Amino acid sequence: MQRSTERILTTHVGSLIRPPELLPFIRAKQGGQPYDQPAYADCLEKSVKEIVARQAAAGIDVPSDGEFGKSISWSQYALERLSGFERRPVKPVDNPFRRGADRARFAEFYAELDAADGPPASAAASATTSTLLAVCTGPIAYTGQSEIQRDIANFKAALQAAGLKEGFLPVAAPSSVIPDRKNEHYRSDEDCLHAIAAAMRAEYRAIVDAGLLLQRDDARFAVTYDRMVPPASMQDYRRWLEVQVEVMNAALEGIPEERVRYHVCWGSWPGPHTSDVPLKEVVDLILKVRAGAYLIEGANPRHEHEWRVWEGVKLPKGRVLVPGVISHATNVVEHPELVAERIARFARLLGRENVM
Figure 1 (cartoon, one colour):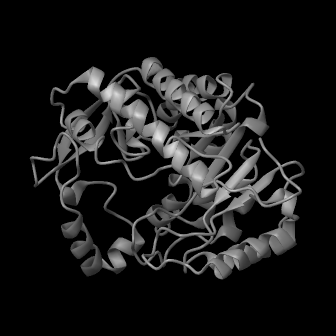
Figure 2 (figure 1 turned 120 degrees about the vertical axis):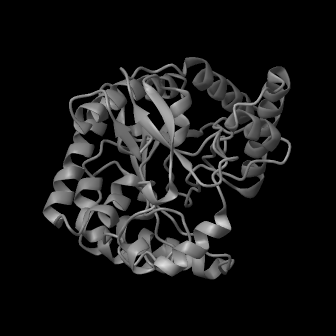
């Protein structure tokens, strides 16, 4: 993992807007419709090459492939790479994603937001009155070897063409893999989680073995607080987190920490976020995850003040903090001097060589 004492290095959290040329193929894959597979492979390869070149031109030191190889979401994509799951229609009111303290408190706002979003772009897109729930009905195993090797090959070729020496591929952390799932096969949800982690290890290992950085995305880490507390307590939530950290670290056994990035956020939807768990309440558990870098959002109005957490928290030796200093949660383009101030706050507290 790159370090620098000369300047602040730059990166981002992974997902980028898909180019128009790629969208027809993605929609066909989502809807289970036939498509020209050689044409898709060619378009995907070219799209990754172009987006890596654009990142290099923008001054990004450590880019991603934009997650262009995923035809579902950043977490649901695993449905295409794991066995043991089926998808069933569920009424929107029964969709487990559409719950939480903020959703209850601001019900009218979310009714308007959900209506504006429309039905999900998936195989259920034609069924406007329902969405799909992932149900575990059999043993979980990794089946995405061809997809991950394709993504690795496209990305490495793009990095070489752009003259960049390092890049990362984002994948879901175990707790965020198909997060709103129902277990009908394993004895418990925890057993199901362990099975997911064991299966996803194949993807984690493939990325690191290819010489790329592995980024594990984990919105579920923080978002679960909004779903769980109340009626559960903060202690219940932290016990749940401790299990997630234990499972994550087990899945990383044998993978060097310096090849791993860990990304935590509070969800990207444009909602109030008044019930987000404070960073100060969970930062100790975040730092227990085996990783060389921690990516934590810190630029939106709900979390920008949390840079002060690092006044009293020591970053483990040899690790890097990658704070979010530009937010996508607002359509206001921040002034460069404000972005510079955000960077400088962290650099003064942690040392500039420990901040990306």
